[in-house]
Image (cartoon, rainbow, N blue to C red):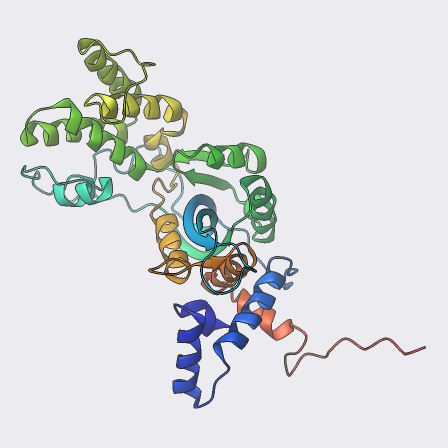
Length: 366
């Protein structure tokens, strides 16, 4: 099952098994087994292994997309469409004791390099010089162990799954608890419903994306745009979100654009309006100096990495999944393989049919 979870396809898994073991199961057999085990994993009971309460508990959620088809219509792809996947990350972390002062009051160098920031914002880099490095970096807490979930179910169904996993990992008992997310509304609905005692934190990297786009629309030369971005990003990093919202509002008023005005997507003013709304909607989740004093994470880079790792198995050129059973099973299997608590190995060893596991006794015939 590990090979099926890691290989790009069941066919590649069959080839790998053949080359490694000199014998193999067919791709169809591997597909059938993956569907069975994947379906079972979603309902598998905890193994009973001892779980230690973490110093810092971090829950993150995000979404992805996979291409699916309607099954049962013969060869070929029928009714293809995109489906949203739900991914959740559960991290056990260790961190230093809370501090009285901000351990990193200045914007780190990683957010002051024009090429790197442009890559984050998924935009062209400004033709401007990055400021000299000042050896500024926020370390944050260190991950000890991660587990994860992935599924095609709705957010209403995914929330209870996340809650069970957090209980399983004893995250609700941690003295410091964090829920990290981007601006997707369903993230914060899940946080309010299932993780109300967790500190909600907006991923700083997503804020950077909006600030970079706003700076591009604000100024007319690349040098001024980069200078404006640095000013805005430093202010948000230091918790002065209200000041940035006020600056955006002043600039929009100068352009005679109201904060609630609906603009076409290609309007040159749209990035300013969008950034102002985004920051205003999430300002209560952007007290970054306090989060750093408390030794909490403020970026969802591990969550972004997990989505890419999930996508490595389920998303690619000409990769289309039966909706929903084929995709759901492989998402469950892939997530279990990426967990660092050994749950896939543990489940396979406990699963009926494993050589060292006693099969349930058959009922006596009457």
